[in-house]
Length: 243
Ligand code: SF4
Image (cartoon, rainbow, N blue to C red; front, side):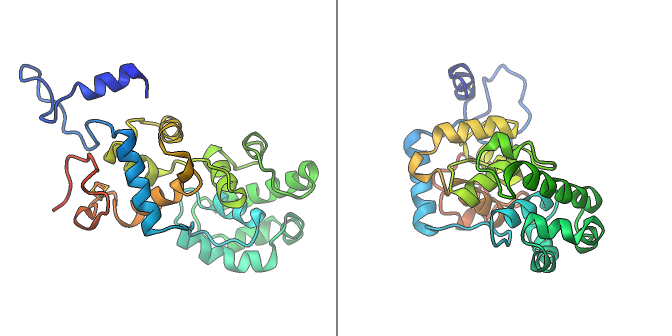
C-alpha cells in the first residue's frame, strides 16, 4: 500500500466519514490498517498456538504436491485428497503419470470440477517436467509458471510447501482475512501478496500463508467469523465482529 493510499485509508473515521458526506456503503473490511507491532503480535500468537502449521493437500513429494495443487483450483482439499489417494498410489512421478495416460487420470479425478482440463494439464505438465527439467519440479517461480495449469498462486504454494521458500500464496481465505483484520486493503491477490510480504516479520514468512489459510478456513470464516473464540479478536480491525 502506498503512503498516499495509507493516508486516505486512515482519513476515514471509525464512524464512517465526515458528517457532511453521503453515508458510505457499509464496509465489510477493516477501516484502517494494523501497525507493525500489531502485525508482529498477531503472528506471534499464531506461532504460539500452532508452531508447525501444515497444508491439507495430501502428497508424498514435490511432484504429487504440484499435481494436487493444480487439481485444487475451484475444489476443496478434501475432495482433491479423495481423488488423489488412488491416483498417487499408481503414479507419483511424471513418468508413471504419463504411463498411466490421460484417460485414466481423467477417470481418477472425475469427481473434481474441471476434471477434463485438469487431466490434460497433469499430462502436459508431466511431459514438460521430463522434457525440460529432468523429471524434477523446478524450485523457482518463473520456471514453475511455464508449466501447464500452473499460475502464480500454485507456484507460490509449491515453493513454500515443497521447498520452504517464504512465499505468500493468496487464495480466497488469505484475501478475505487480510482485508478484514487490517493486514492489507489490496483488492487483488497480487496486491495483497505484496502487502503481506512487506509487512509480515521475516521470521514468520515460511508459515504465514498456512496460518492465514487455516484461520480463514476454521475461524475467520466467510459468512460467520467465529470472533468470540478468535485469538486475535482484540487486535483485529473488522468492524462487524460476531458476538
Ligand atoms: S475477530 Fe472475527 S473478524 Fe477478526 S480475525 Fe477474528 S474471526 Fe476474523
